[in-house]
Length: 345
Image (cartoon, rainbow, N blue to C red; front, side, top):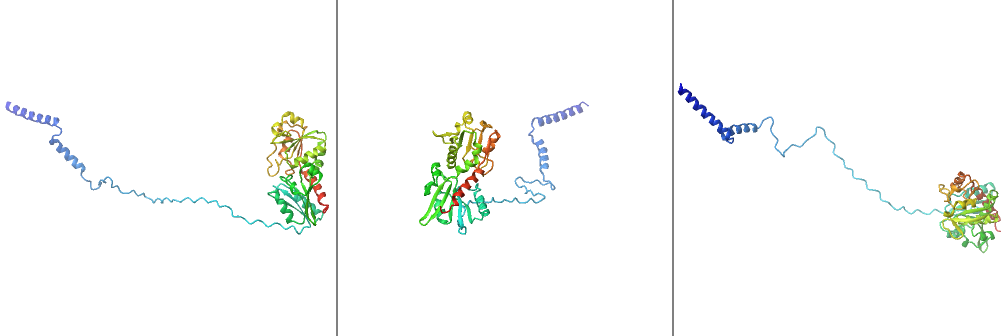
């Protein structure tokens, strides 16, 4: 019995010693063998799920066909080409008219003289025609006279009312005193053509505004061009003291910056002789202090188109009386026709 217990004790001792050796030596081939066997089994190829080698992935193909992107090249920007020179229009033939009249200046789109005169000729059964001759240089007036042997007279507007004088043969006394011409009479003699200069602007101004000017004594004239000189001549004749106002001030000419409240109170008449506000630039007006105007003031504008300029409108907003140049235009045209109708004299 004792021998049996001894044998079992030896067996247990051997087994415990083997277990301890295995735990203390994990790299022992006895355990690695089983582990390696399991690893080999896990790495064996599954016939239904064959692994895909790295780097040899198949190309992905969607279930639908995406349209290929279309690349449209940008259209080249159009090249700017210089406009081809157009043939010059043939000059209009006025020889069928017994008498030719007209207007020179630039620009002339604002002028209503052509319509007025031609309507007058039609109503009076006069064999004549009135044309707008927009010339770029005053020298072209020589060609106008030479090319039209039936030309009997023409009006002159901005900017040539003073520039025309050297091209005239003589001036009447009033035009010479004013220093500006708005009406020219063409006299045809056996020895050639004679150009005589007149000024009917001052007549038109006086007849149009004389009644309104009664009771006023001092006037500011805005601008220093040809029409302003005719206005000064008319105001002098009416006994109204006057002063020029311009952007370029001198000893004799006031600057717009000098129009103080006291000056505006002293001069109760203001005459616009500038083209500011004339059609089509109707949004412009002379730069005067409109806030200093009152019901005592009279604003006169020599512009005939439009009927009411911004200068007039702003004056009326402050209580001033205002009148435009439509009537003045008609009065000076009547005076011009009185000169022209004495053809040959």
